[in-house]
Length: 67
Image (cartoon, helix red, strand yellow):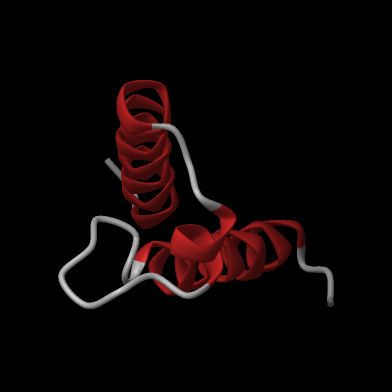
């Protein structure tokens, strides 16, 4: 599996964790934007953003295009 596919797989894992959490416990917007320490969402946004940015960069490399 190439790097882009691995990153997409991780993004899907994160989405599934998020959806399961939201369906089980509901979602307080504060927990999403400013989660407390040791919360499931503590690093969620930062990790997901980094993964998405890398996937975009790889897609541009594949197409020889620029952002």
